[in-house]
Image (cartoon, rainbow, N blue to C red; front, side):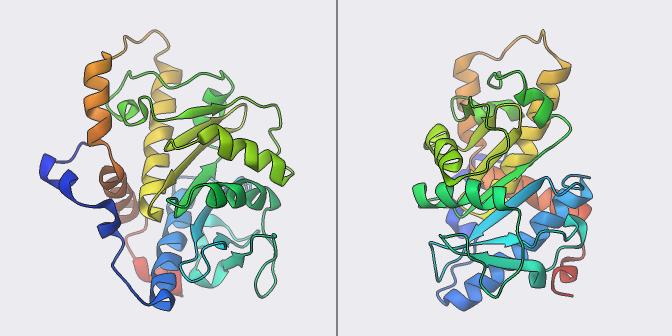
Length: 255
């Protein structure tokens, strides 16, 4: 899974086209966001409306895009995305999962480096989060989060206020992921593809740890070395594999 060393000399931002026009960049991000939702849907995630992926708007960086509430993830298109303001207002009207606003707004405010954040209630991430423990470096993928994820140890599992989201933002700090106690996983990235790629990897890590409770950990030196290889470029690549596998027809997002 790890990429050759030469891939890691590239700026991860290069994997989002260098588009100066905010209107054009907005359109690009919306296409990637709709694809990200479709990948989640293809994985069978979010079928109860239990998840959300955000994308910062390039022209209005205090605002972000979300999928409209009630649209099945596997059918998400760019027309189903809504722009959410810093006060929770929805440009043009519509409905969102308000927990998504409470979680994502403080994250985007507190982390200017974050373009996207992803969260969903998944088959392994949610039960693993109930153990209120960090991932151990017991697999190649889990090294991606070695020393680079935190725990939101809080009983507010139904985030119903901005204050709850601020505590999540405080918990994640500068890390690439946070485990929400009794709730699930949340990952962030400098691109939509990287944020979702990290989420795909983290869900696999949770599965391994749930299934291999007595595993022998990888040593810290090697775990740290592999962590550095699993950067945002590698996360980006993980999403490309998932997108090409599960949503090969990218034109569907604009139909």
